[in-house]
Image (cartoon, rainbow, N blue to C red; front, side, top):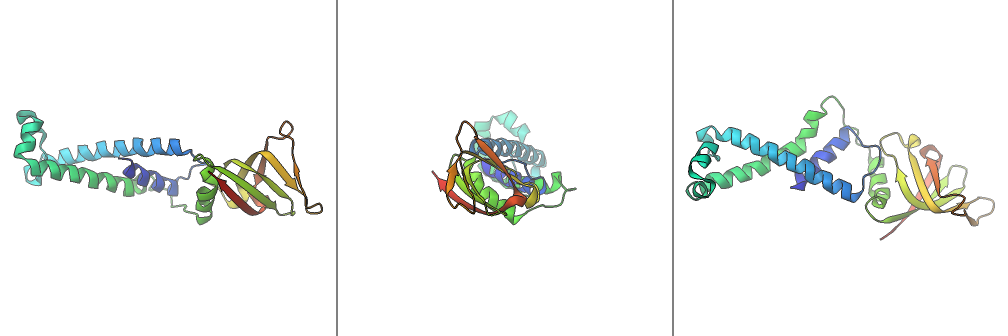
Length: 202
């Protein structure tokens, strides 16, 4: 049931990107919620088409008259065909629905944004992502990913790291650990980042 919701939300993000990463639990809930709505909408479409007898689909008036059990026995083909049609229509809504809902917005797919999501987004899915960010002035800031933004140009994005925070100055070459009580988070601007090195910890 969640598959049509997955396609719909991924298509939605191409035209209306989210600002912050969602957790794996939040995404799963949204996939199944949207998927359930798409299946209900698809069922309504199939039942509507079924009012035309020649469509060969399930007919509500006959179900109400004979009962679903008896109707299924005498019209098994219609029941199976209707179920398959519901699945096909739900996937169609999931695949092309965002294009209709957000038809005024142009697709904004950005490969670099996907890379950030694929690697940094694992922090929102229950894994610990340790990042070493080399800045344009050659300083290196290290820490675990807290959150990040993705729906803007790379130079305007922000990456938040959380303690323990390490800072390496180019002239010293030795990492200095910031005391947790003094520094728990640091926010980096995309325009200041020269290179990101990541280590994913289960």
